[in-house]
Length: 550
Image (tube, rainbow, N blue to C red; front, side, top):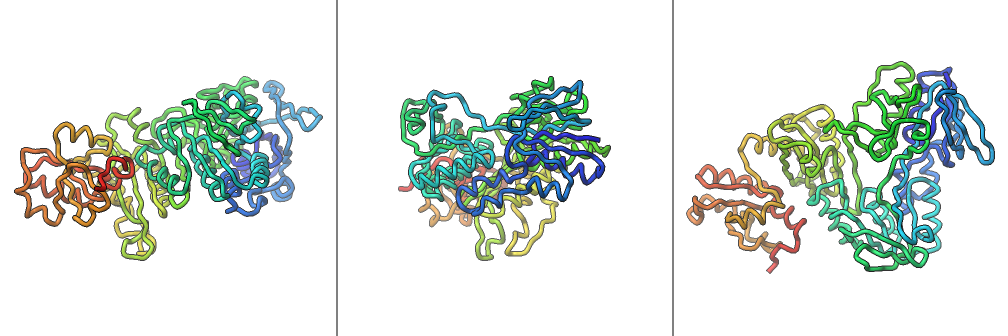
């Protein structure tokens, strides 16, 4: 069998090496129009910062090593420009030479390309870059070598945009971050992203949200924003998203779907016989909603490459879809998410509930414990886990990985307290934040607690409810809610006569535990009470301007 693969890196090279392990006698040819067929594209921003010191560390494999170990015919800087599915050939361009190559099976792994909107002055810009591959990286590094310091702008505050903003700060640039959405890191919900925005500002990044670049002038040095304002940028990184690289597939009569993604079945077959597709260019099923989605992440691409090789070799494999699990580090914080955000979940499900859990990455009494915030999005009727998000200095990867596994396994919030996770003081807590999130979600479903979300508080107070703050008096120096009643939790039972049983209350503490305890006390004494989910610490992070420090 002769298998031709168009595109290397995650999907293509995973397919090629797996095929060789399964089919020693197959002829396997890999074409890639770039000079590097196997590189760590997720590591590119960290070479900009200098954390990955050697550029060579990003080159995972070379054609020579792939030939020696796997007997693969890898042809870099060779572009497939046409597919003749009837003749089962591809037309290939290498420098000035054009030739045909036959195939029995064809795998397309073209990846995605940066989305660069058309703007006046962009074509004449000499200092505007994207970062998707090694040649892009080389251009940026050459610019930094000559520029050294100055004003840098990152347009787009997604995962790569945030990593580039951090990297440029570490290189000594004065960085501005521009994001069209209302908050940075749009895949996360606003309140979780607010922690990251605060961390950016703390580290000197100027953050501009609800704003976009509209034009460039002075060969790219002047950026003109949608509100008409202008500012100078010596170096600009465009990071506003990616689009499937599907022109070749379309020209071959392969069906496309949303945003030009390649349509495949659950065995990665396109509508054209003997042509398969994997990676960032293909449409997958979002496992939770069942809807078509484009999920451009390294882990699914690697898995798809292996699975399409299994299919061609005759093994029973199906693409079950993806849930979109990702993480980013921004200075001293990490933010991670899996599944659906609260905003997206509400578009598909009518029973969406959420709970925020404050905790520590390991036992609080062991030195070095740091704060983390975990958000669980779930079905109030079914207990089904729709998604999760986390922010903290350490341990976020562990918790989101656990919850991603729970989603994939079909567990519910009632299963989370049953998870037996490793515990010793340096590593975790006897009741891990994941366990606590399960308990808290179960309480909401069973009616033991009734929560008010941070975005509902002002409306609820305007409707006549009163806010009861059960923090200790010493904590009030960190800031207070306006017009709140203050009764420390430990004094609550002895001061119940100060409260009105005809009045509805919303109770808050610092992180949510004591307010839950207060809620339980008050309800059992006949009071009408709800708990402010995430409590003071979450509300202050989202709305620092609404906190009274007087």
